[in-house]
Image 1 (cartoon, rainbow, N blue to C red):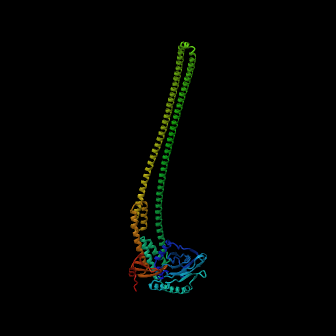
Image 2 (cartoon, rainbow, N blue to C red):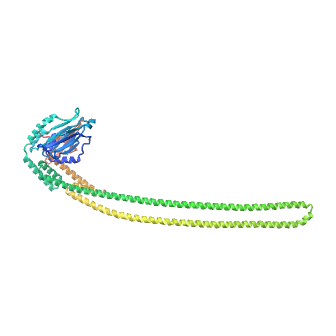
Image 3 (cartoon, rainbow, N blue to C red):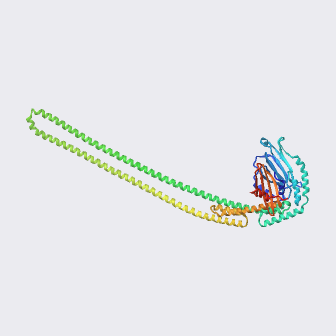
Length: 583
């Protein structure tokens, strides 16, 4: 539960308006299961009339916040989650606050899915009195919820706390009496807010100016001047935002151009590699085909030569065999005749020895003649065979020479074709290398031009950032340095500049933070006690002059205690010493 004293002081300062606006834009909504049927449709009024622009801060038991603002009808609405507890704080600058408790504890399971309930509370806010004593008296009344709604599991309804409803009228009557007349203070506060707003506008501190003009509009809602200045600030900030978006668009365009260039370069490299691989593959296939053809042709030639040699060998052997067979036959015939003659001579030898001797010379001469004729015939046959063999050898030699000449011509043609192809491939390669060199040169020139453009944009971004930093426009300075870093990521200057700007922003935020606390809370120590689950949280705001510090003590249910100053860890002694409440 939020401490009511702190919540009351929060509505006395214009900072809460800006705080809730930031919450409205940045804080995420509740993420637990939503129940569209468990709903609050509240109305905020002042003097019985709808109050527009009131801030409605809804906090569940986990500390998750949801910031709403009432519309022209003074209305707001919200869908609650099941099995949760909520603190609802309604406030507006210059007015009292109104606290409501809403609980859906016990509403779970199927019942939650079928449950329907709409609560419509009316919250009356009064203008704040000018003096601190009266505000303290109002605290005594407004330090507790004025309305409470809770889930009734027996009736399956959301009921209102009757005791609070009965005391609501009395409490509001007391608040109304304490608020009283305060026109002089309102006018003084209005003029102060306008004066500070105008001064902030002159120094171009639009956030501060917006806060002062918002304060003025809250003090005197019917005045047109603060509203017109707020409109003017919105336009100035919108123009700055448009320029920031244009810068972001330019940055995105450059990134896309760079991405497209990289993709084109990658595609070109892939195509070049594919062409080179295809050419290499084609060359290898052609060389293999030529080698296979040459090997096949050589094998065929060797086979033909071997077959021819074998054929010639067989023919020669056949001729020799036939000649030998014929000579053997002739010798056999000669031997037969000789045997027959010997037998005849032997048979006639006894009867005609004398005639034998007479006729022996005649027979010897005849035999010599026959032998001479036979020898002549054998010699002629041998000469004929030798001539035929010589002719065959001559023809074989001529054929071998012709085959060799044909083979030499085929080989010469093959070598000529290979040279022609090699020359064509070399020319194509030279042309491709020339084209690649020309393209590489174009790419180099294009990259040089792109680098010059990038350098110019980089220098411009740094100069723009330096100028914005000198003018203390740190958001614009950081955006410019980020742009420079995106243009040249390896450069260290932009990152160093960004670190400097972040340090300046942090210092400025820290200064604003402490100044805001000083404006938001009174001089001295203001204590707030809340619960975060099972942890008791004691917050003490210490204001000295224009400086404020937030000290926090967290006591867990298991006994551990932690101390913080402006979210940094401190010791118990430091906490007690610096937040001692003087009586």
